[in-house]
Image 1 (cartoon, helix red, strand yellow):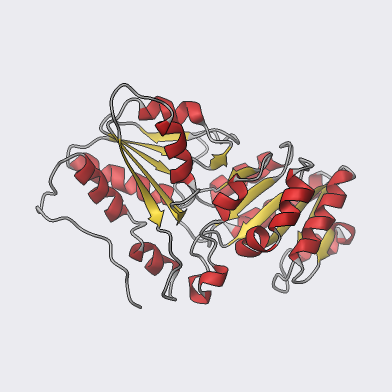
Image 2 (tube, rainbow, N blue to C red):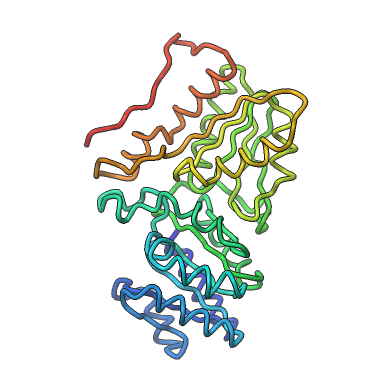
Length: 323
């Protein structure tokens, strides 16, 4: 996904002279061809994220479209004030590419785990927040980023994630994508958890529970109409994200569902990282499993909320995995 993202930045720069690239401390060779072809539009500024945002803001004010690429925690936590004041307040056309959203940097511990980046960016007026499911969706999102008005935060996963989206379901910034339809439950996903949502829906159908899967690659602006339309049809709603349950996808969906005043009550559950820092180092997959960001946990949660029993009669509770 990261390679696709940067490849598209290069592609956009070739076709549009307004496109600039600004990096912090990327590896040697990153976008080397971009640097060789267009050195006047390529900047590697070192570990000085606040300066990166200031540079990008200045370029955007001159009509350029800067793509700023660094680790997600550095681009959200470290230079929050610059992002708010320099970009959000002036509604500038700057694209923030956050590498390693979620638990990607699990081997480096909590300082590098971007578990609240979506919540941070959601809170900034004018900011658009995108979390693609796979490399193909990243390409579609990046191509649309060129002409989008205002600042954008684009969350980049680890790379090598399964390809689960296709061009048959058109991507459009601000629109949710209906991946599967059912009337017993609604699974709402963002980022790489789409794969878990689709797997869970397939397993639940074998048990007689038909679930819709609505994928939300654009978390802000949120597609209220699509979410409410599908939420209205079902008694059970589950969100899943590789992010804190505070302020991310689940929180955003809870806000609009709670204000919808449906005539019949809904059972609702957010799956994600609870209000804690990870106590363990390890792999992204290991921590996701430990926090219950898994296909198994979606199945068990919907099964329980639907008041149906597992074929085995057992409930599977998520547990932290020791590595």
